[in-house]
Length: 121
Length: 107
Image: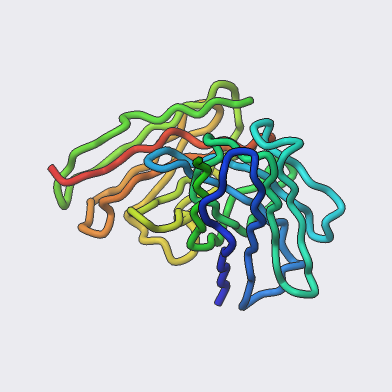
């Protein structure tokens, strides 16, 4: 069955960097447009970024644009999120998710269990 | 950006109750709306897509309706496993946006 496992979260100081990984199993990663979605503690869901099947196109939320980079290695069945210049407001559980793509957008079909990123001095 | 507003933010109900949650979009999103269920410490789970299509494996007591700017999620007979937080999400355009959530708790 489809399984997504995130890793790489932890505590980092403001201004620091972290790279998250999302290992996919039970399916071929290259068959899906992939997304990162985050959830601050006790708050709602916020879409962060997506990357198309072959990595040819990427799109970011304004809140992370210029600081975060989404990438993928289909040969390793792994999705990444490089996070630089981290701020306190980036503190959240980060989920990777597969999506069903329409001609307007996408909804999220399978989710990982999430990895917690805490930005604090 | 399209703003999604859910109401109520909290709903207290009993097992067997019929429950309705509303989601409003700041502009028309046709039927490009999904609903998710999230339990504490867990990832969200897809329930409904395209406003009214039930995801495979989701119990038929869940249903969705609406189009344009107003949508509803209905649970026909609330079960113990349904106490959770529910989110709507629009996929009419990027950035993809979610409603603030509706927590369904035990009366």
